[in-house]
Image 1 (cartoon, rainbow, N blue to C red):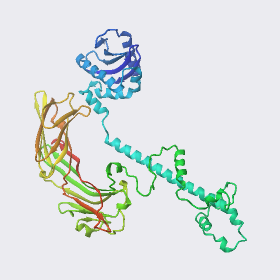
Image 2 (cartoon, one colour):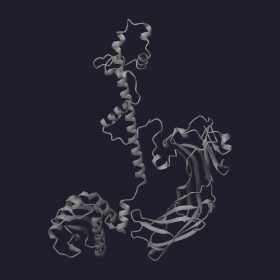
Image 3 (cartoon, rainbow, N blue to C red):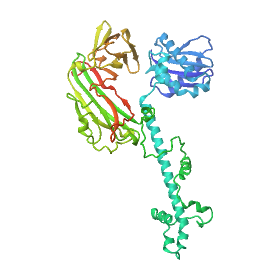
Image 4 (cartoon, rainbow, N blue to C red):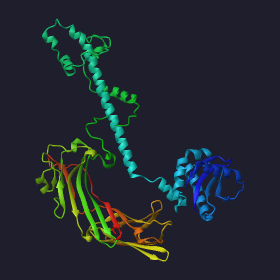
Length: 524
């Protein structure tokens, strides 16, 4: 079956949406759609088809619309009807109605949904719920990018407010200097005690370049009238002017008024900080594993470290108490500014207790790092045995996992098995959950937890005959609350007063940087 195009037209022949899945010229698809409007009958069948020498029109009336797919005459009519039914269900789901205006206002939403159903002319084995999931799927990268964008916008607002304050302050100083100029020249006959009037001397000394405004307002006597109110400097006065300046720039102000140099903007601060805690300690590790299909170890590496993020200067002078230092086989490196003698007792602290750590998530400071490399196969959390076999015209794949390191409890395990088949795999048996991602041609095997209570499991599925190497490399991801180093952060204290504990949030997690099982013939 080859779907050439899918379209939605009105009963009078107006094309509202058309999506081509095969490469063709615009004049060609317009001709096919124009031909459909001419030859379509007024039958009341639920599904109707019209065949020509070149194409087949399969359509379905939907109130005042026609939902249409154009296929080649050799296509399977049952699959065509199945595709048409699914496309017809998507229209009220994504357009919130079947009127022409509803279709026009949700054109791109409908096209994206059509793309999930048909790819390169072939129908995907998806349900309506899966289409909805794919089109509304949350993107971690997009969420991070949005946070960064909002952070930059807020920083721009802060800088605009700061510059507005500075400009307003300079205007007030220039105005004050201009108002004082005539009176100072008229005071030549006065004694020296009168000339050395402290407020005037201070103002003209701090801004000597503004002795006279280029276009001063009419001079007024500072001793009489309302102008006398500007003789002193009011620090909070420019705030209203600064807000007016920001509004004049067309910036909608949602950021709180504060000193932008007090705490740097943090991209992940909104996610990390809770309950007013302004200190984040991250003791995490990443795991890199590469194993052969025969179970041989090719690479095993653990990298970890302790990072400190201060979101306020009030908590920037601290020491972190751990159960360190780490011993062999771990290789450790420490930040040069930290005191090695303190580290020998498990404390991560600066040589100078009065020196503050940087603030803001952009300046998260790595205090200590460690690394572990090994060729011991028992070090991996669990082993995976992927065994493809040929049975007639099918490939039957058996995959199993078995816990190897009982110290590591793995959660949210996903085992991704390549499956470049034209048909969805048939699942014979599975411990856990298995989903076929038709777009990526990958079978996702998900296990909630691998631990002593669930130390082994198996998956078996079959697909049309493929080469054994087609099912590799197998990719694995998981998280674990247990670190290989057993590093633990016990508490955080004030560097100058170690008896004072500091509230903090602790993040400790083992994640996979790369965990793969490659084919034995990969190097051949």
